[in-house]
Length: 71
Image: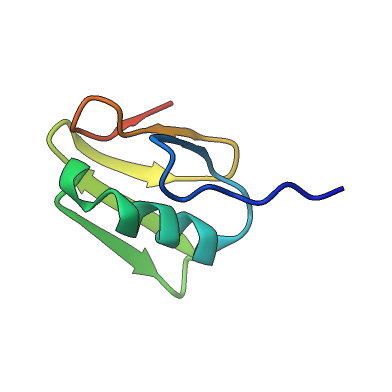
């Protein structure tokens, strides 16, 4: 059984579905400044108040505090 993802939820675990990660980020635009996807390297970087993070599968994203926190 496959559970539906809630893109409005304040937390998200990144998987290999880039479109889902982008959908979650677009629902939480108030917690980051910009993102960049490098097509050649297949890398997603998110720029936020604490700097920049390379987003990879398995990372935990948290928008609970009005800023993006990654782990």
